[in-house]
Length: 242
Ligand SMILES: Nc1ncnc2c1ncn2[C@@H]1O[C@H](COP(=O)(O)OP(=O)(O)OP(=O)(O)O)[C@@H](O)[C@H]1O
Ligand SMILES: [Mg+2]
Image (cartoon, rainbow, N blue to C red; front, side):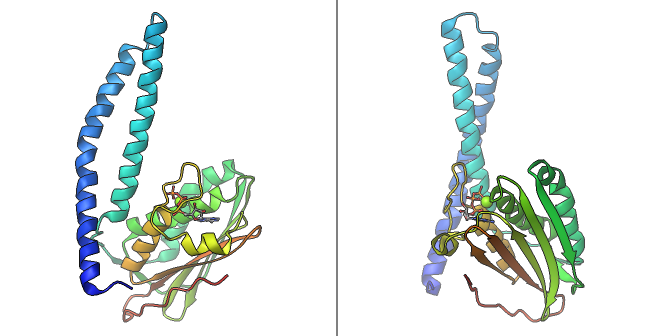
């Protein structure tokens, strides 16, 4: 645990870093716009020299696109969210996210199974929560490259609404599971490693918890618990059960 002074300092550094990321974005988009114009200019390359130039421009555009993505991920993670919470039917929001990812799941041969229980209304910023849930669903699908089952289950747990996102994918070793919420931790070639920290942050901002259980070769279960409307803020311990 960090002391209050340390946490102030970390918050300050976070703000500086977010400011820096923001500043970098502006010249980067100028760079990107100009590269796009150059790409158009060279689109009908007449000789080898022009073809090589076009290849380089295309590569540069790809790299600037990647930089833009890294900055976007960082800013989404670092941004202090101003929550707009309204008493919400969580099952409806979860259903909307599953409808949204349905086509991609089908394409990846992932069968989506829903099991919705009765839930208390939750004071929710629906847009932020959707982002959090989509991160979990994307991870689940990425863990099942040859298809599988994605089970999304909701149920009441004490005065909380609980959402489990379960996959039948690769699972995680104890080592990976203990690091998976760390900022910039990723085992994927093109992963940024900000998906889970962002999700956890959003859930914490809702006074909830996000935990995981996982078994190599069997799959993983990510559990979110959000306090219902009118409940006192009661933070649960973060446990990683393996
Ligand atoms: N459902 C899952 N099954 C197996 N491993 C997982 C699962 N979810 C997360 N992980 C592990 O946790 C790591 C961190 O996940 P996280 O979502 O933060 O980053 P990422 O998916 O690698 O990159 P991105 O920033 O694109 O989300 C992953 O690289 C992976 O090793
Ligand atoms: Mg991810």
